[in-house]
Image 1 (cartoon, rainbow, N blue to C red):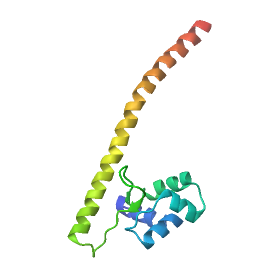
Image 2: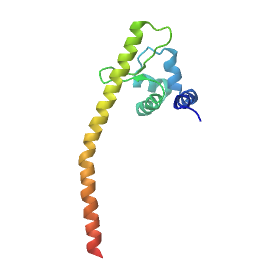
Image 3: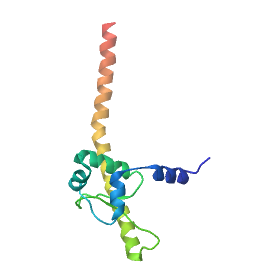
Image 4: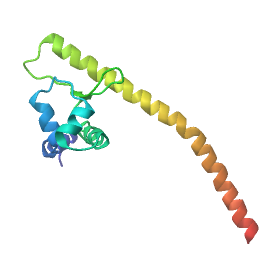
Amino acid sequence: MKKKYEQTQEAKENFKSDILAYMLTDPTRVYTKTELAARFNMSERKVRLELEKIANFYPIRATAGRKGYSLIYFDNESSFDELTQANMDCFYQIKEIQSRIDSLKARMKPLIASMKVTQEMIVSYHNERK
């Protein structure tokens, strides 16, 4: 049985994306959706969806305060400062994702409550019709 890390590495190696290949040519550069859409002749929405897929395998910097996307890049040759920056970028990206999760959870509460009420009403309605 393969270990989780090996499965992740294998999936990463098998993942193909023209946008990723392009971004890897200059991994520290910031790319905008508009630029990528024009380069690959696709809508900005499709670019965003492709970037979401890429982010499942590669760390991408896409914070609200920055314009565009870039890979959080580091290697064995990275300096201490570069590694520290990559670490902080990962930390802030995680915090931003967690904030979105918390926001979505809050939006679910009234939906769940309404769903329960309507389910009860449907059962009651169905029972009255018998």
